[in-house]
Length: 229
Image (tube, rainbow, N blue to C red):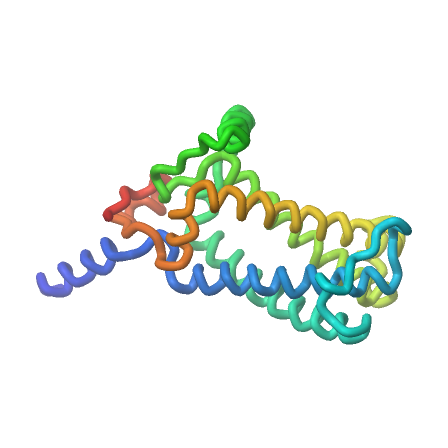
C-alpha cells in the first residue's frame, strides 16, 4: 500500500462526522413519519374511542375520515418499519448503540433531570450522550417495537392472533397501542425541550456534528473519539 493511500484513508477516518449522512436521513425520516402516524392515529382513534372523555380536535388530526387516515397510517407504518430495521441494523453492527447508549446509571439520570428542570443542563461534548438522552433513546426504541407489534395485532387480529394474546385480547392491544402513542408524544416533547436547551444538538443532527478523530479505534475499545472542531 502506498503512502498516499495510507494518508488518504487516514484523512477519511478523521473527517468522519459523529452523525453520518445515512444516520441523519434515517433520523429525520423517523421524525416526519412519527408525526404522520400520530396525527393519523388520532383520527383513527376518534372513530372508535377508548376513553369516552377524550376526543382529538379535527384541527390536529390527519385524514378527512377514518379510512383516509388509515391510508396515511399504513403508509407511515411501512416507511417506519423499513427505516427502523435499517436504523437498528446500523446501530447494532456499527457499535453506535453500545458506544453512545450504554451504560445507563440511575443516579446520573436523576442528576441530569434535575439539571434540565432547573434549566442548568449542559452538553459541552456532543460526542457523549447524557444519562437522560440515553434513557430516552433506549426507551423510545422499545416503545416503537411495542407499537409495531400491537399495531400488527390490531390490523390483522385473526392472522396475528398470537400477537393479540400478548395483550390479553383485542382491546388490550388497542390500549397498549394508545399508551405507546402517548409515550411517543411525551418523548417528542421532552426531546424537543432538551434540544432547545442545548441548540447545538439540533445543528449537529443537521450538519453531522463534530468531526471525529481516531474514530477507527473507538468502536473497538468502546471509548468515544475525541471531537475535532
